[in-house]
Each structure stands twice: as structure tokens, then as C-alpha cells.
Length: 93
View 1 (cartoon, rainbow, N blue to C red):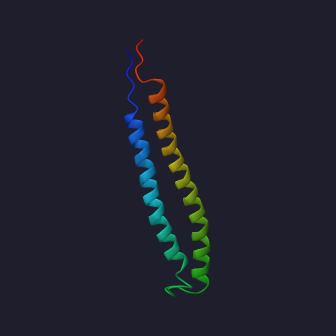
View 2 (view 1 turned 135 degrees about the vertical axis):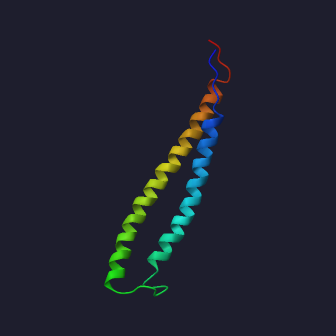
View 3 (view 1 turned 180 degrees about the vertical axis):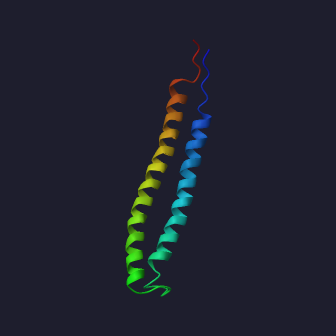
């Protein structure tokens, strides 16, 4: 007999989604804070700040892409767990 337990897939997928969303909130705050250093808070101004912020905006796009892929992976785990539950509730060989 083969026993399938999709609970681990489901729980891990849900955890990945939740943690990714929390990380995204923190990352958004972090990037908005840095992006406002020259114009909003005045903490750092000048050419150096402008160049740094320009680079940060490129990093932000890459980070957002990574988070999107990570969340998609979590969603995929959840979907696979649900498929397993639907089609293989109890299978005996």
C-alpha cells in the first residue's frame, strides 16, 4: 500500500505564500525609504545619491521578480497538494 500525505505540501505552500507576502511588505517599505532619501527625507542628496537610487530601483525590480517566482512556487505546492487530495484520497496497490 502506498500512503500519500499532501498535508506537508499544503502547509509548506501556504507558509511560503504567507512569508513571501510578509517579506514583500518589508521590502516595499525598505525600497520606498531608500528611494526617498534625496527628495523626501533629504538624508542624502547629490549625484552619488541619485546614482545609488537609480541602482536600487533596478535591484527592486529583480527582487520583486524573485518574490513573485517564490510566491508562485508556494501556490504551485498548494495546487499540487489539492490535486493529490482530489484524485488519490486512498489508493491501495
